[in-house]
Length: 165
Figure (cartoon, helix red, strand yellow):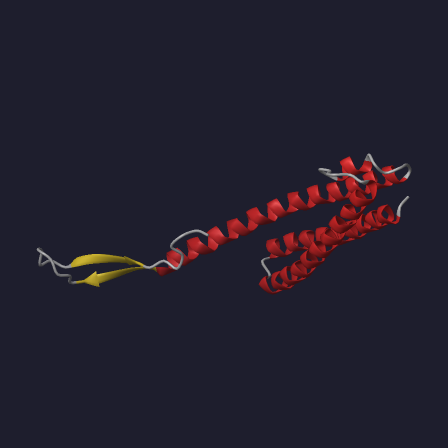
């Protein structure tokens, strides 16, 4: 096995570790969203940003290593790691595919939890917006200028959120 192949397998293992940390963090974030603890949520989001920086770094490293393997093997182009594995000798090919599968499964699980978290956040925002609109709706009674000399009522609705983001 070439040194680049060894580096790729190590990079995938490191990437898996990072994504496992991220998975536990998004699970924790889900619990915090249910609790509604804003201070804890801020800490989790800060930690999430740190992990995302590490994800970007390891992804760049992995891409560089794959570029080296392509150069060493004189391969023009591949679409994914499965394509690359065809050019790697056994037993390293199997190990590479196993690590790729572990990473894929982690990403699927993270995606599911993030989708649930997103729905909870949107639901909370809708609830907050609803309550703010109720609190900020005011009725002003008094005279207004017009054809009628009778007292009229003006509905003055001031909304903090005019549009959804």
